[in-house]
Length: 628
Image (cartoon, rainbow, N blue to C red; front, side):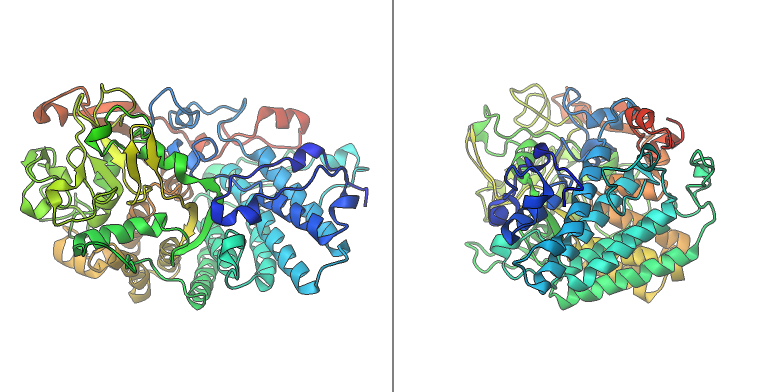
């Protein structure tokens, strides 16, 4: 049992779990020196199990999630955060930004140690051992997937090397990317039978792996494997190991999409058997009866911010959203304009605002009833817009006649914020709203922080958060979602379209998501309002619809960066300008002039992270990614 030596530092991993999960995720092993003690008793083995969880990337945390500001979805105050430099095209093979190579391989190492030794624990029932083994196999698969998604082909560490291994055994090669995906999918299949359908004790075990989580991740893994970045990518034909092994199969395989369809349907069926469904706001008690408009917005918002709601398949209990919500929340309450507890940072650019559909459920540049060319013309909010734009406020046409997700997800000059201490939407003039022009309460030039594009986030903010004073912000915390049911539905629609082409079943999964968002069906919207009414009836058109639906539905949830990459659309989207409004202006006619915040740069090499050159120096068998 002394084959492996565990450094004391590897055990000192402290997790910032939410209060509902502290008993599960905040326990770490004592400072045990060797494997001998780590698996002598169930209590010690359980601590090692928790350590295997501790390597999970902290989704939604600016310091550990490159998908937050490393792409084009959110822009940040320039002097903050290294990941913004990645978005600007400043990635480097010397200390790569967002590098997870060492962290993920440390996690895989500890998972292997657990799997090799858990059978030796004397005071455990066989069923519990099977359950723990399944959890760790899942984590091992997830860590491998995180690496493949970032770096492409990687060395698969199926078993730890013994301490007696010679230098040639240690200097491993990268495995072909198809082998990587097959191994990950196999591990998840092996894990599935031993996992529970649901968590028995959410108060103490929320965040632990269940069968729906495992099968949903497997569906995402196989959809990723079937996507253009990994399926027949001829751009990667030159990536080979030094021994000549080709790391990418450059021949497209439709069978990968067929396999993904089966995986998606299996995951959906299991989620349904676990009682999961798309979240609809329906409180057991509320002081005021709210309008359907607000109910729809709260359903969209609550799908993310309501803790452990019916739609959340998997949430990261190690990601504390208090700081995130404080960063993105604006100064709603005019009584506390000098406070710094809310900062109004993380700004969606103009192109993200234009990505959302019209109120008819089609892209604004396709809607034959929408004044697309006049979208930057000034307009005053009337009675019909009162729950979206403060009545009587002057803003641009772009902010009118948009779909409910536009208003539920984005804040802008004049945008109404329901909640935050004001819950009577009949008193619409009393609801909080933003004022974003120069030196206004949410504008540039005031003490504290502000948007850098003219747009703010609503989506990740719980509507019951309240600013109590200039240094007291009451936050309803929730674990950051890794995967929701709407994500799984749209993955299934995508796989079905690529495998079989458009049809009733493809539409079904998209329409479920659209219905919760208050939109008509795809067929209704495109037939009646699109300049391309047959778009949804052919594979290419439906692909574009599904892609935009995913980017809208999952916006600001650390998904866009990965989706654009796997679709090979980053080279198009991430070379567009980051635009915003002219924030130094006080009058609407001057404020609503588009200005360039930054000119992005994305090359073909940026589809994959560089492997840190120090790892290449130490192991010459590691082939560097192309272009680095």
